[in-house]
Length: 207
Image (cartoon, rainbow, N blue to C red; front, side, top):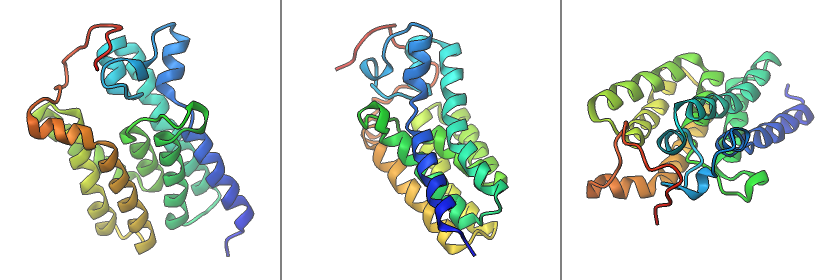
């Protein structure tokens, strides 16, 4: 039987963890600009890579993955089932998308979603990464790779025997992730999406 107090506390902690914008904090620490004001204006690793370099991007990616993974891992350590772990992961994911500490101006969620998946079930996380790598190698679009890998993850969850409530939670995160990538989808369809390895001018702001 679940004790609701600790579960609610973990969900709240996960949301607050997700609300820590790694991109903004890393760029401030390194005395760089604000990633929300350059390029795609997305506080994520890809935009940081294009405008502030590999080191800042690597730190951003690590932070975004960790803030999705750590709260779920804590829940797993406490013996919570996968449905509750998915709820915790979804809270971290929502925190990244709509961070309370940064005026609810968040990122698109791929890295934090990946971290949450690894916490829920490492095999689903590995599936996500494998699909992302294959898509990136074939097409060199970060956004397309993330979208296809995300779309595959509920099917992986079902094959691996995740409870229906957990599959529903993963699917809900995928829907939000697709919604947050709506501009990327339009750019992909119009042939305007930037490929991996395309670097923006440092400090440039694209309108």
